Length: 157
Image (cartoon, rainbow, N blue to C red; front, top):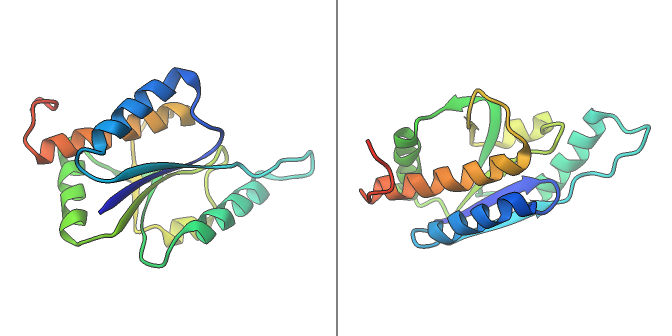
């Protein structure tokens, strides 16, 4: 299984880049992993948030393959503990998922077409975070799940 971490927005800001890079490198000891930063839709004075979501979602759908397993990070998704995430991740690996894609939508969220396409909607937290921090938290939690599944010391239960 290969893990893909996708985010709509600008490249990693300096204040999170080091952490994102560190956790991504750590994940690579368990699974092949890569980041894909998807450029946000161009906005003009006449562009609505719905138009932005629609354009970004079209770009995402075009980048997805038919068999990709899409995990949408969504405030209305399912909350998981770190241990539950680890179990969930192991189940996906056991299902021989080829590409597991975690998606952080754009500033306006994602269009309904992405919500319908998603195989799983995951709520990272009941709190709201800047997208840049979500990337860091996502990478850290995926790494934590990997260590839990290997019974390593990183996670203390």
